[in-house]
Image 1 (tube, one colour):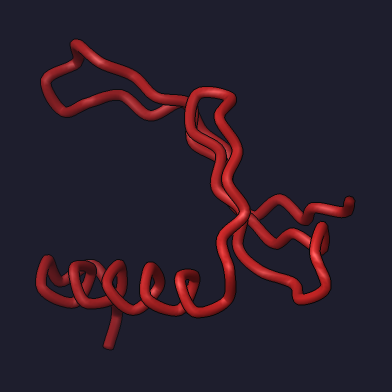
Image 2 (cartoon, helix red, strand yellow; image 1 turned 90 degrees about the vertical axis):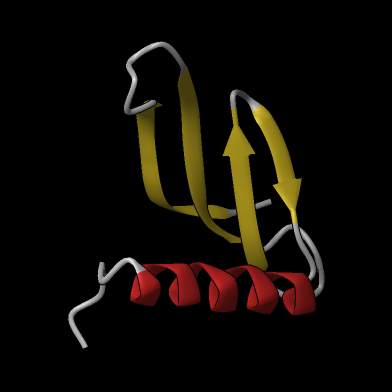
Length: 70
């Protein structure tokens, strides 16, 4: 299994009361490379179709919140 880390950070809630350890990147654990996500040491490697939906919806939210330079 080979993972390429793209993001890893302990993220604190805006209110300051909750934190999560978030990591994500690329995984080649299966036949087809895909997205892996780890939250508080719980790992999931999603299939390509699920990865596409996650990325699309995250981009939609980012556009709505004007977080992307487009």
